[in-house]
Image (cartoon, rainbow, N blue to C red; front, side, top):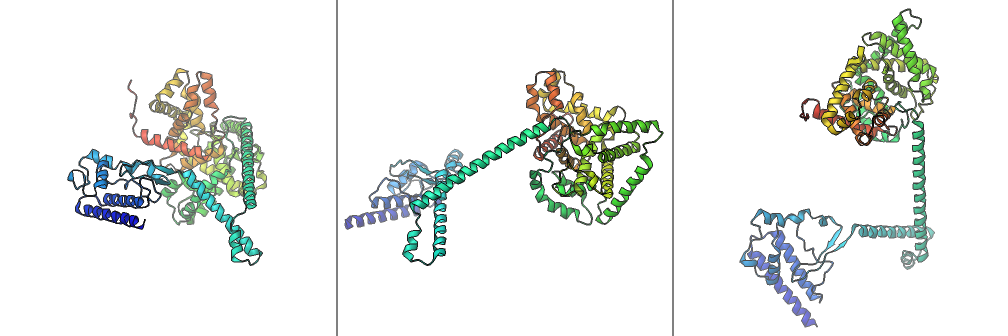
Length: 567
């Protein structure tokens, strides 16, 4: 027996010497290929020594070569392994001669099997054609979890033994192995834990469904701005990482307004929104040392305007008509929210709108401007309230007079700056809105001809649904917190938001294309367009909306004839 083993070992050694000599003589053979093949052949010989020739071994190297490297052809490998002297036809180079051969030789670089947890393959030498056996990721993960659990149980048992008192080494070693009762207890604990997790999941689903029902019932007035989910946790977590960037930027002695616009375009954190909106509206100067003085001067200036212009007993008939219209519109603004039904809040809105109308005689007051005050009012009101305050039910009379005056003054000045770039929307005949409606019609016709033809075929005119989009800047179509997030981007637009709002409306209409195409009559289309289901929208949907609007603007804004359909 010893002689046979010794003879087999010597035979394997001779074969290894022949292989090494062949590899040295074939100087042009790729080093990686020669090494892998030599290792495989030596492994086969060692397996033959053990009396298990042709069977797969766990320690056998994979038959696959290094992915992405040129390798000899299969026939060359077999002849190379069998003869141990040279390559096929006496050729000593393992390089490929054509691009097709090269492509085939490196095709395994993209083999998805190389990314598996482990591959044990049989060698393709000496006529063996063993099948590959794989260890799946699931099996590997299960085994790893079992090992971790075993070590965890062992550690717990060891800690308990040490706390109980000194024991012998043999007793401790024996106690490291979990007993049958302990294993049953551990399994029962796992099953109880899984049952509790399943119950928590069911409770969460039921709670979510109940909230959805409440939200749907709350949306009793379609097309009205709403405060639901206003202080959502997702919003705070998404913008938490940006607070530090805003602080560094706002605390600089001279503000970089371009950098602030770039940072605010994707959303402003709630804590930084009031200050950022004042700066983006150019209500406050970039110089930090002048902001407090300018803010105080502006607020005092608004109090002077109130004293000079806001007189309910004025004899001017035009002013009386303006005030009468404002007095009618303000209570109807948000009838389902108790905050806007408070007398103090309505008086603040009436003063803001009336003074703005008197200072802008070319346009005067137009229905719809009252909705544009709301986002500014909420943002500046949040600044003086504690986080987590329920805005819908908050009693504004609990605030001091100075805080109420500051909120009113800041809302007025920011509204004035905000409306400067869209004032032609509110002049006689509202020519600016009519032009934008026609631009929206042309834009949709170029972007999506099928949707445009569907609306036209059923007699839907763009003016019938998009006039309110342009006049109220989508405040009637979106919840209020979504409008505030949208205005972060509007205020950050470098060239004003008037043009960008056109592409936001286009992206907003295209978002509902699938539902619109399912409506086959005028009534169904108009009911959907005037009551779009956005009550469950959050900042995530607004982020997608402004991103799509930016893409459309980048594609079509500077190319009026681009992709124009030929008639």
